[in-house]
Amino acid sequence: MIYMDNSATSPVKEEVFNAMVPYLKEEFGNPSTFYKLGRNAKKAVEEARENVAKLINADTREIIFTSGGTESDNMAIKGVALKFEDKGKHIITTEIEHPAVLRTCEFLESRGYEVTYLPVNENGIISIEDLKNAIREDTILISVMHANNEIGTIQPIEEVGKIAKENGIIFHCDAVQSVGKIPVDVKEANIDLLSISSHKIYGPKGVGAIFIRKGVRLELLIHGGGQENGLRSGTENVPGIVGFGKAAELAYEHLDENIAKLTELRDSLIEKISDRIPEAYLNGDRENRLPNNVNFRFAAIEGEGLILRLDAKGINGATGSACSSKSLKASYVLSALGLEDAEIHGSLRLSLGTENSLEDVDVVVDALDEVVAGLRRMSPLWDNENNESLELDESKFTDPDH
Amino acid sequence: MYSEKVMDHFANPRNSGIIENASGEGTVGNPTCGDLMTIYIDVDDNEVIQDIKFETFGCGAAIATSSMITEIAKGMTVDEALEITRNDVADALDGLPPIKMHCSNLAADALTEAIKDYKSKKSE
Image (cartoon, rainbow over all chains, first blue to last red; front, side):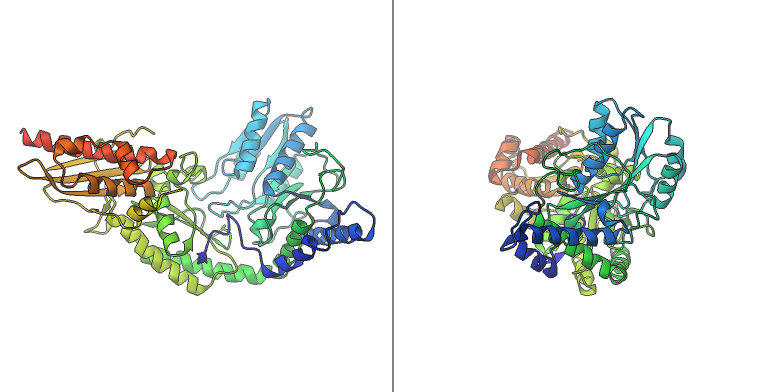
């Protein structure tokens, strides 16, 4: 199997698993208890906390463990909204945020908050001018993701942080896709709140963290026994946290070499696909892009079919096509780039991981070449004689009963 | 999600391609929605569908239903083929997820359009 869907989730590394095992077996203590078993668990949690903090240049006390990126996003956005509602009820975010941010913002809109969704250009990057113009007297939060999960484009968060600071507005950054893949420095970027997810960096699922800059106050999402300095109640997921901490430690140690390796694989994949397959177009900025993200659209074919045929060859990827989604809607991220639905349906995301190799790249390119050609042979939108897409007479199209 | 039959028809579609100078041709769907199907039929003097081919832009279910309907319709008379419903296609495939049922509708519609086209050409 060649797994290239690391933006969806990543395999748990051997060292991470090994670090977790004792905390699933003999070290089962509750960190809030003060006998040795509990103190051992507490120690392990604090060590993990240090490693997560180091990864983003935060102070250890500024890291709070959660159940994952989604909870961290909810905690940050709802936490600020509720805390500062007397100061204002306006939030600025972007059109390409993860659903955990977008649905939370929509929920707040239903409760009387106003949200400005900044658009992105055709490369998937926001305009700093737009951000400046969106700021109002009553703006209490700016939430801009560091890197996008579908197209891997990287936003200018240092500039966003600077503007947020100048205007006294809290800046939340969903860094779920960027932490561990590119350098993230909360001090340099003036970030107030940041979301991290363990299972995106070769750690276990069900655990993540929120960075809360010292001095930033939030309304709580979860009330209870007062764990995590009162900010996030609930008995700590010790094995998960230990795994997460180990994953963070490894990510920090190997950051530069991982960037180099993934960039090489990514660039090779992009180049080879562009060379071998006609009418293949890269989605999202070529330069300001995660080292592991490849996202192409192929004319005249549909994405779910593409994924199934690649799966049959043992290759895992993702698509933004409508038919592949539960809602039957095409990817809103690709839509935000200005693409037509018909173009979006033929999209493929390959997100590389440290387990991948240059051999994998070659195997995948060969497989893609074959699969795309096979689907195009059957497609009414492809001219098999001239090997190019067909412009069909639109009067032939009907409105299917969706 | 998909039955074995659907996966089989998707992996090994039957009758994909075009028929030059077909007796009838029908297209339904819209690239915007992500589904576009064209069915070509070759009909003999006894009104029997001697040959039938499909071209599809669409998901696994779209390709599987196109393939299946060509298998069902081949050898039928055009009037018999007009009776084929979306449920016939879905049943032949051992069922489709509810969210994919509209694909089987498209297949039945495309065949109907092809037959209509044949009949209108014939009466010219």
